[in-house]
Structures are given as structure tokens and as C-alpha cells.
Image 1: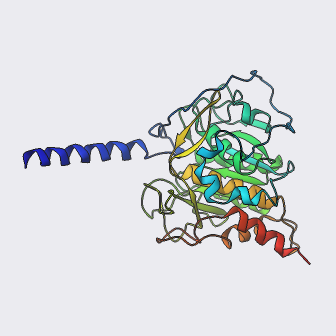
Image 2 (image 1 turned 90 degrees about the horizontal axis):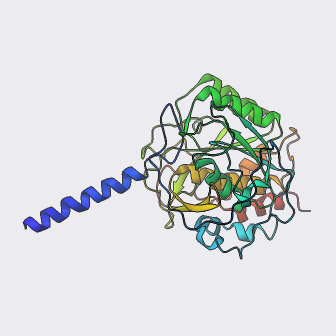
Length: 341
């Protein structure tokens, strides 16, 4: 009996350690997000480094279902992105702003996709020295291979960010042409942040925000704001991912457990959290934007895009996951069908 008790104690400690390692795969204000971890899978030859502030898209820089690493991206298949590619792979006119720790210039699968960048932090570089932003950008690019990226560094090299800085980043992004804004970060409420979210929405951008990794129903910002699409995380079994926040304020869910994507300097690895879930939805939003039209005459398509994403979800078990699991193929199909004769 003593051995069984000792074994139970050991297993409990192991579980606590594993949970602690996954607590914060979402950027937080005044607090490091370093508790998340990744496992590098392999390295590729480093691309030439460049200090240029903008990059031209490469016609050859496209993803394919045959890419050796795509099989690892279970989330891309789960949301039926490959089926959506039969209709659209996105469009270079659609720019997705990644407000994060930066995007690494040496990651050859992403460098040619970045068309603009800005650094709002005290870091001396807009490059990603932390690894979070590059991972999010990789997931977005894998889902919307023909769309382009905007590197808006609002979190420093320790993964820390402030609401006022994020607000500045949102305004800059939409003023410089971003149609989709990915916010894989979580923080306290802020009037400046809400104003920036509302401004971006009024200018036609769709904002995707991680629900947070608190494991409860406590609201997270900016996800809680009406003009953000709040995203919870799921696992491969379509259940709520470990520690994902949830609640009536959550709009949709997307893969957020053990997600494989790019890391700085041509590495690849896995991350868990609603950050990755938000990135999946941003990729879907980019695909839908490429085929959406303004049906109500308000001069923008962000409302049509949001409607299509929310109304094409697959129902999943559990409360607090909004409309359910996003489905890229159904969202694109719903959008195209609106304009069919």
C-alpha cells in the first residue's frame, strides 16, 4: 500500500509539472510568458539575414499539402484548410498583422511573406528573439498560403506587453493596410485598448484574439471586447484544450494543443495554448477575406467574414466554446455561396 501511495504522489507531481509547463502560451502584461515550452524538431539551412524593413512576396513561397512538415500540423487538417484551398489559397492583397514578439527574419518560410514591420517595444530589433510571434505567423501562413504578413512587435524579448502598446500596434496595423489582426495575447481591460479595437473594426479590419489560458470563465482582454472574435483552444479530440479559458463571451474554438509551427532560425516545434488557436482562426479569416464581398453596402467585408466564420462552425461537446470548432472549408463555401447566382 505504501508503494501505491508513493506512486500516486509521484504521478500527481508529474501532472502538476506538465500543467505548469503549459500555463502561459499567451502573452501577458508586465509578466513573462516564458512558462510555455517547445521541442525543436529539426533545423534547416539559415536564410540570408536582412535588416530591410520590408520584403517583397515570393511567387515560389507557397505551402503545399506535400510539404514534409505539414503532416505534423494536425490543426490545419482538423479545420479542413486543405479542402478550402480547392476554392482559395488566399490573396496577396490580404495582409494579416501579427501583433506579437516579432517575426524572425531568418525563418525562410516566412521572411518573403512579411511586407511591413514596426517595433513598438524597447527591444533594439523588430526580429523575434522570443519565439512566440514566429510560431503564430507560421500557423497563419500554413492556413492562408497566398496571404501576406505584417510584423507588428508589441511584446518585448521576454514576452511582455502593455495594453497601451498593443493599442498603438492595432492602430498602426490597420492604418497600414492590415485586413486581419491576430492578437495572441491576454491582458487587463484598458480604455485605450478598447478604443483601438473599435477603431480597427470601423476601418474594416477583423480582429482575432486568444481567449487566454486561465482554465476558467474569467474574461480576457482584448478577446472580451465585442469587436474581437474570441477564440478558445481545443485538442485533437475536439475537447477544450488544457487550461483554455471558456465562457459565454467566447465566440469560436480552434486547435490549440500541441501545435507544430515555425520557430526562429529555421527551427520547428510544438506549443500549446489559445495563442495557437487564435492563429488558426486568423488564417481562416484571411482565406474568407479573399473571397468575401460587401453584401450590406457598408464599405467593408469584416462583418461578412465574421458571420461566415461563426456560422460555419462544427458543433463540439462542452459549454463556453461559442459556435464550436471553426471550419475553413465551410466558411469559404458559405461566403462564396452568398455571391453565386
